[in-house]
Length: 86
Image (cartoon, rainbow, N blue to C red; front, side, top):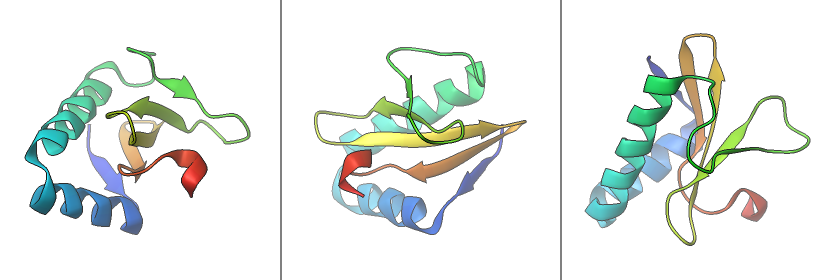
C-alpha cells in the first residue's frame, strides 16, 4: 500500500530520521502494520472524533501517528506530537 504524506508529516518523518532512530523504527513498524491490515483496527488505534476517518495510534508516550486509509493509499497526517497539540 503506497503512502501519501502531508508536508508536515514528511517534515516530522525527516526529524525522526535525523534525531531518533528508535522512534523512526517504531514509526516504520506502525506504517508497515497499517499497510498490512488496511482499515481493520489493530493494537490500540482509535478513530478520532469529529474527523472523516482519521485514526491515531501511539508511537510513544508523547507522539502519535495520525493517518487515514483511503482505498489502497495510506494518507499520513502526522508522525510527531499529539493530535490535540495541533
